[in-house]
Image (cartoon, rainbow, N blue to C red; front, top):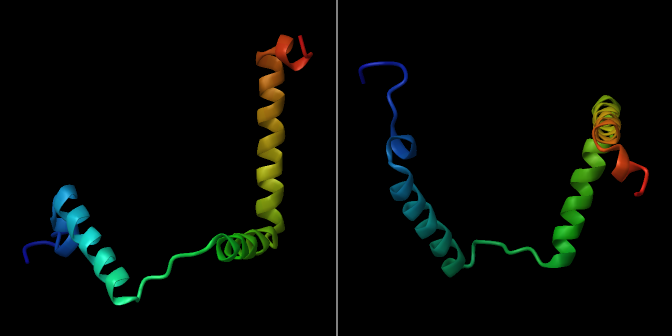
Length: 86
């Protein structure tokens, strides 16, 4: 290898070739029964767990709440007729 940043494996392939190969892997996993498809209940449970995990970070929640408030205020200033319900 010539340099530190030489691309190998997936990184060296063009996007179409990479996509085709990844698709084959997914199809093979499903055919062998190794792939898991979430039903709606499992997906809901997984999303809930993720939401609970992120909500534990008080600083993150405060930041996104503050950004939401700023965005709302910005919209009210930019579009006063809509904000007043007209």
